Every structure is written in C-alpha cells, then in structure tokens.
Length: 209
Image 1 (cartoon, helix red, strand yellow):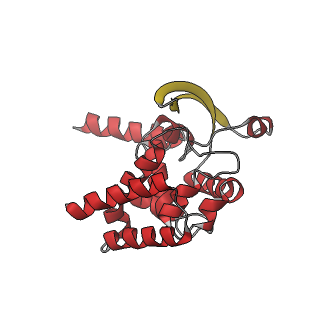
Image 2: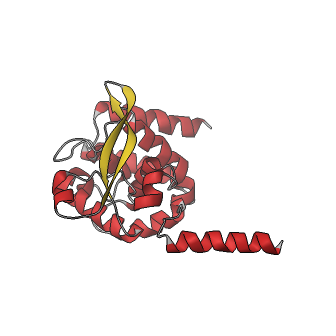
Image 3: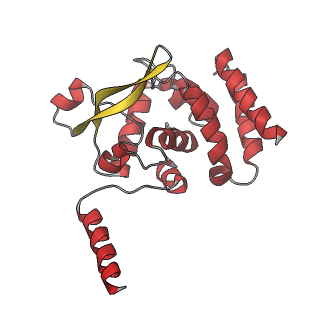
C-alpha cells in the first residue's frame, strides 16, 4: 500500500514539474471564458470541447491550445512557440490526416486571451454575436480569412455539443435559453438556411424527449 502511495505521488509530481496540462472540466473552462468581451463563454466552451475531445487531446495536454489555432508563418517567424501535429481535416467531404503547425501556450489563461484577440480580429460576426451562441457559431463561417474549420460537419457538431453541455453550464431553464437564443438569431438574420435546419432539427429532438 505504501509503495503504491509513493508511486502515485511521484507520478503527480512529475506531471506538475513537467509543465504538462491537465484535462479541464466543461465547468472549469466555462468559468475561464466568462466575462471576456467579444466572445460567448458558452459557445467557446462548446467549441473547445469539440476541438480537444473534452480537454483530453494531445494538443491540449501539450500546448493548452483549446481551439486548434494554427501557427501561421508570421507566428513562427516572430518566435512564438508552436508544435507540429498530425490532425484530422475534412477534404471534399472526407476525413484525412494532415500535419500542421499549431500555436502553443503556457497556460489556459494565455490561450483564452489569444483566442479572444483572434475572434475580434478575424471573426467579427462572432464577436458581434457574443451574446448569442447560435449567431456566434454562424460567425465562425464568416471569418476574415475563411471558415474556422475545414470539417464539413463542424456546425452540426457545435449544435449537438451545445445541447449536450447546456444542462450543466446553463442550468435550469436551459431549453428555454437555447430556444430564445435561436429566435434572436433569426431576428438578426445571423443564420444561413442550412444552419437553421440543423438547429431546428436538433431542438425538435430535445422537445420530443
């Protein structure tokens, strides 16, 4: 029993001193993202959960990169830290693996700050809908330099993950909040028809349960 205790203690110490990240919970990440102008904390948590496999991916554990943010040549030439990783990407409706450069951060706080700046700079439609998760998701398809992700099912994944995490993060009345946000997105004309169809179908499934 004593030997097992020391082995566990040593493993914990190595984890701490190696600088390796840990798998956050959705609630922890949500708290990290809250109160930051220009981003929707709930939407960011949903997005990061998908991008990191619920904060257990190699990229998160080794770089605190919570949204698959690429390290372009300008980032690398400026001397910022990065890592080269093979990751799944969508091409012509099929998934392939491709090696890419990703930004590396020293902490979740550093990541969320850089993420926020990227949203404000490159995804103004998301920033303009920081009070509405559906409009925020749609804004990821209206970036200054293109879509956020190549995944042809990305919006669908965001929608269903939002419904999955809503009870935990939004609390009682989460269904009403999702529906009210959808009505607001329609009023603002934030959504494409195909996005409306995905959200409508997902919300109908919830109502039918």
